[in-house]
Image 1 (cartoon, rainbow, N blue to C red):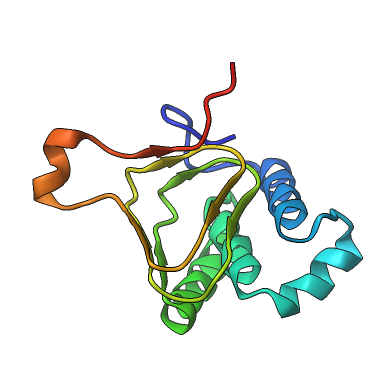
Image 2 (image 1 turned 30 degrees about the horizontal axis):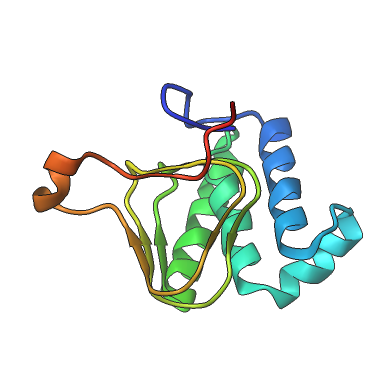
Length: 137
């Protein structure tokens, strides 16, 4: 899981693990064939897939993933930075109006619906940054 103090750039094995966990959150299955089939159906999964690949340590994968993430940001109305710390089993369920600040920490098993804004501007600095999800313990 990618949280505070951990490098933003991950090995592909860790990224694939996170993508599989996201697929399980969306569809209840982790198989490659199921993932490819559902990639076409779910706009949120499509965006999350490319968002995860933006943290790759491979330059070419990262470059193409950033282009695709930007495309889906405009198309679906999701504004989530690739710098945001996001744990496993993350899902965005509806199109539009999702804004998440890059300093937010999203832990495991979190579902985001439309019309959600996490983070803030200069007025929110005194409150700190949001941490969403349960702490394992």
